[in-house]
Length: 305
Image (cartoon, rainbow, N blue to C red):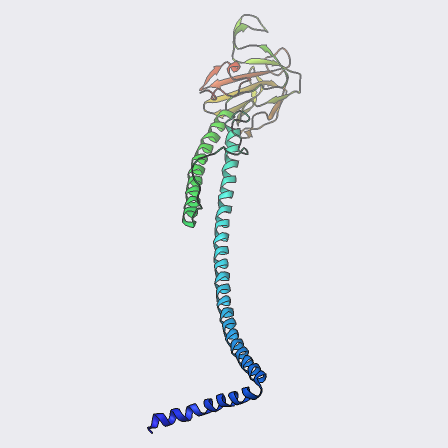
C-alpha cells in the first residue's frame, strides 16, 4: 500500500465510521437519525444565511454612504445656484428701481412702463430636462445682460439727470402764487409820466409782504437797491439765463446763495419807480431781455428742444 492510499484510508475512516454509526442507529431509531440530519441542515443553512445577510448589510451601508455623499454634493450645488439666483434678483431689483427713476425723470406717462407687470412669454415644441451646464450658462448669460443693461441705464440716467438740471435752471413758473399779469412785456405807455416806454418785464398783482418765488434753480448774483427797481434780486440760472425780481419790500437772500425753483427770495412791495405793490419779473437770455411769457406756465423750453 502506497503512502497516499494509506493517508486517504485513515482520512476516510472517521467519516466511514460516522456513516456506519448513522446506519446502525437508523436501523434502530430512524426518527432520531432524521432529526439529527435536519438539525445539521438547519445549522448549515443558518450559517449560510448569516453570511449572506452580513454581506447585504455591508453593501447597503456602502450604498447609503454613497447616497449621503451625493446628497451633500447636490445640496452644495443647489446652495451655489441659490446664491447666484439671489445676486441676479438683487440686480433685477436695482434695474427696476433705476427704470422707475428714469420714468419719473423722463416724465413718461403713467402706466407706459409698469415694472411690476409680468412679461408675457410663450413657445412651442417638446420640453426636456435642463442640464447643470446649460443652467449655469443661462445664469451667466442673464448676468451679462443685466450688467450691460445696467450700464446703459446708468448712462441714460446721467443724461436725463443733466437734462433735468438744465430744465430746472430755465425759468418755467410764476414768481408769485395765485396772481395775474397787470402789465405785459414790450412797448407801453409809461404809468407814471405818460409817453412811450419799453417795458423789459411783466408785472404781477401782489400785496405788500406776499412771498416772491424763484422761477428756476440758480445762484443769487445781485441783492440790493437799484435805480428805478427799488429792492431787487437777480438770480443767475446758468445757460445764459438771468431773472430779475424788482420793487420788493424786503430781500431775503444774499449774493452767492443757492436757490431752488419755488423757494421764497423776497417779499413783494412797491419800492423804486412804482405806483403800487406788485412783482416785476424780467428774464434775460445772453444779456438781452426776453419776454417772460415764453417761459411761464410751461415745463421748460428745453422739453421740446
